[in-house]
Image 1 (cartoon, chains in turn orange, cyan):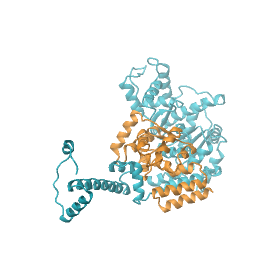
Image 2 (cartoon, rainbow over the protein chains, first blue to last red):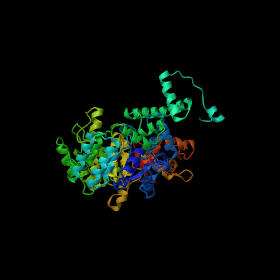
Image 3 (cartoon, each protein chain N blue to C red):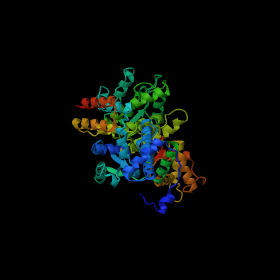
Image 4 (cartoon, rainbow over the protein chains, first blue to last red):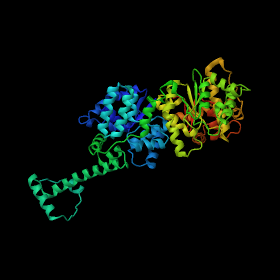
Length: 168
Length: 391
């Protein structure tokens, strides 16, 4: 089953060196071209080595760049007229989700709420980490690193760490 | 000193600005230290200040939830990597959706965790009778999982063999599997089980007397449990019995890694939707029966009025193409996404792709829907529309 990744979650997965969790969770990671163009800009690779990790994932077929069909492009354009606050690449993610009934992984809660309102299933990045069947020590390390990268609230971090403990 | 070209001059406009004398003195002192004239320094300060102002405004948008980080980055002229770093540096907190914690917890552990087979469809204490029946009629090998919204509050239920859903399902099984007098009551429930069919509900309590908000919350809370059922039983198909819960079922399927193309969405069989439900489910059971080979009766073509109409069209192709061929062609040309029956009918008419042999007219959306329901192996029907089941 495919899952459409938005640029933010893909960057965080690369920062956590955890892109393989998508595949381990039984899913195939897909991104639209605009997302890939943003996260794999060669000129950024020196400052952000995650660019190289993402390019490597694509070469290892852990990540597929899929073109939108013409109706999907029109849908993304329609969504842009109906919604504000999202980048055109994020609208392409939602268009994929809506058109192909693929779940999407977006970063912000507002984007996830909008996706659900459009009838698109969402899977959070931390759900991917848990679904990736990593050993619990690695899972805990990744959760803590994700919390640092994103300023995750202490309450949410505690709740996630309790879930990791329950898996031990 | 900077030597300006004609192009530089043409690209710039003159602005007259009155500034506080102390500020001008500070600018002049700094310009002297850096070896440039006042104008050039002011130009640079303005440019840098404007960039920083744009970043601050973008961060404020992210913090207030007005824009996504990516949209804000584009506004500020930053790449997303830089913006995510700036968001973290600014100390803007990131909060998880509480449902995410519930889904991870519910999907992996706890007394009602769906990964535990014993708990996969555990019933609420308020409805032990229904849950006992559900357990009793659970097939050893679930082939078709029927997903309802909840047990109704009115005392009827499919597994009590006394509900609208029961009666319409019985009729559909009779038509689809070519059985003129399908068994009734408990005998039908046993047949239903023997065919590998099982009905579960998303919500763990009746929702038809709740407000829409409460109802949505109770249904959504059932998503992890349903994901567990899908993981545990791995049915060939999942049939959603009421359109409004289809997004929740798709979410559960996504969590379970269940193939979304194996999900069909039916209208709940009341009022005008009953015939559609029966026709669609009959088509699906005909396909399930055909896959099972000789153990089930062969499908009988044209048992219903609607099926008769569809069968006539199949037998009398227009320019060698049947209506379902044309529908498949249109869907293929649209990239395999969802299309509404009315959109397909409109395109067939606009491009004059097919006409009814009986009267030479273009098909209506209702005829497209009826034909699609006859070919459940080829088409997937849901609240989102129609699409090809496989590319």
